[in-house]
Image (cartoon, rainbow, N blue to C red):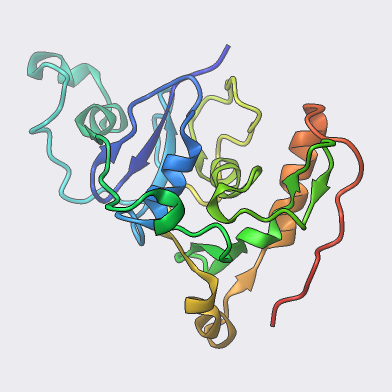
Length: 228
């Protein structure tokens, strides 16, 4: 048993629609790297009746709400917000994702609210023997990668039922401002702005999840290189 989840941009009032498990994780990564960069992002469960601490919904309009006006008094604000979000359609990236987001570059998933970041080469990927390795980095297409890091941190619900492997439904990043940037473009900002690299912390978290599911074998490898 579980609940339905939707990838939601709080500031743009847009969502992926609600599904038992968010399936197109690479699409969500490209959203955060593209038009959703810098916005507050959350993966809402349909049993959610609250918002994370500090998340304030501004300019909330019922103009696009799919709930009939005569029934709205029976729904709370969180439910009405969810039913008012516009479901996004297919985006035109102009170029193929592999060109727009080259896999041979290092990327940084940033939590702008908390000044935390995860490097794409800091999350080991699964090789053909089901072992984790740091030597097969594939940019935003890495597996596991930023899609999994996002879902371990931005789920939000008041009910812990889920069909997903990610069981923390009160994610510490839920509702925070996020983006994804080329690492080289923000390296100086990281050095001088007091940002914290939590790549290893997130790698350990994903390793434990994958190990519990028996998706991998062996130990978590040491990082291949140091940054800064």
